[in-house]
Image (cartoon, rainbow, N blue to C red; front, side, top):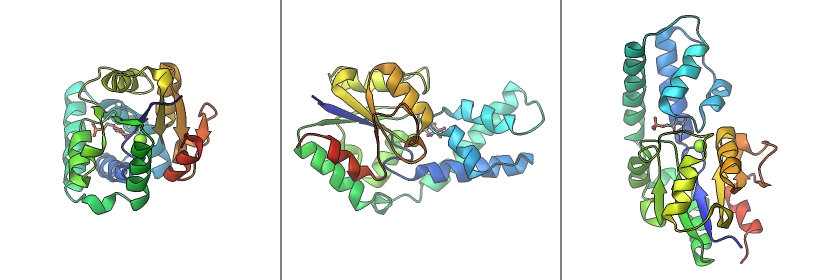
Length: 212
Ligand code: BG6
Ligand code: MG
C-alpha cells in the first residue's frame, strides 16, 4: 500500500504559480514579448532558466548567455519581492486539514519542488514542519520532467517510488512522476493529463483514494 506522498509546492499547496506568472509578465513586458496565463502553464514545474527560454521563444530575438543570466536574476528579484508578502493565510484550511488527515493515516509527507525558493516559501506560510523531507531545486541537477526531484524525495523518506504517490499541477511534473515509477494525483492544469492515476478537482479529494 501507499506509505508516502510527495507534494509539488507551487500551484498545489500555495498559489505561488500566480506570483511566478506576475514576475515573468514583468520581464516579458519589459522585452515587449506577449505573455499570457495560458503561456504560463508551460512553465509549471520547469526550472527558472528553462522557463526563461520558453518566455524568450515567444519573442523574435536572440539573447546572449550573459543577458539571460541578468533576466533570470531580475525575474527572481521580482518574484522574491512578491513572496515577501506571503503569510500563513495564503494556505487554505483545506490544505492544512488534508495534510493533517494524511499524517493521521500514517503517511510520510515530502515536498518535491523544482524551486530554489521552496524552503523560503514553506517558512513564510508556516508549512515546513508538516513535512518529513524536502527535495527541491537545491538538491537536483535536472528539472521536471526528469524524475530526479521525486526520486530524491522518496529516498529522503526512506521509501521506494512504488510506495509513494506524487501530487502535481504541472504536466511536466506528471511526466516526471510516471518516469520515476510513482502513481500520481493530477490537479489544476495537470488534471487532464492522460497519464495521471487520479484526477482531482480539489486537494481534499485525494483522501477518497487513500486507505483510512
Ligand atoms: C517550480 C515552478 O515549482 O519552480 C516553476 O512550477 C518554476 O514555474 C520553478 O520555474 C523554479 O522556481 P524558482 O523559485 O527556483 O525560480
Ligand atoms: Mg506546480
